[in-house]
Length: 114
Image 1 (cartoon, one colour):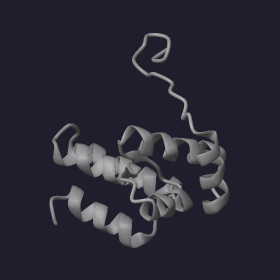
Image 2 (cartoon, one colour):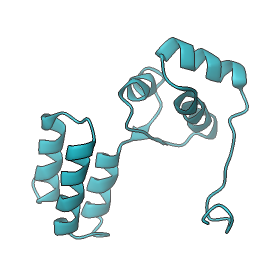
Image 3 (cartoon, one colour):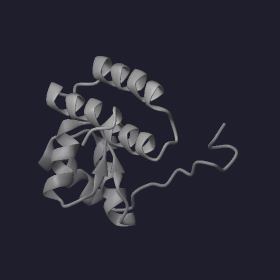
Image 4 (cartoon, one colour):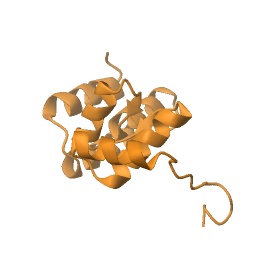
């Protein structure tokens, strides 16, 4: 629906050779490699939660954000209230593969700490 209404656009990365190299070098799936190359090409951050792709972003000096980054940002901007953010963090902690240090830090930040 969002695609057909024009609210979300589908853009393909154009450098297939680079996509294949990134996919092989970093042992990531084709979709992640294409998204990483497209973000690099468009000079914009990549939304990602895949650990290998995050490592590739760091090596390639590509800015990125995770679901936890996003949740913290929208909470700090008061776009959602803390109770909803805490419920979302609980779900992310349950379904995601974040270590406890990361979720603990997110919990402090959502509750209003550092």
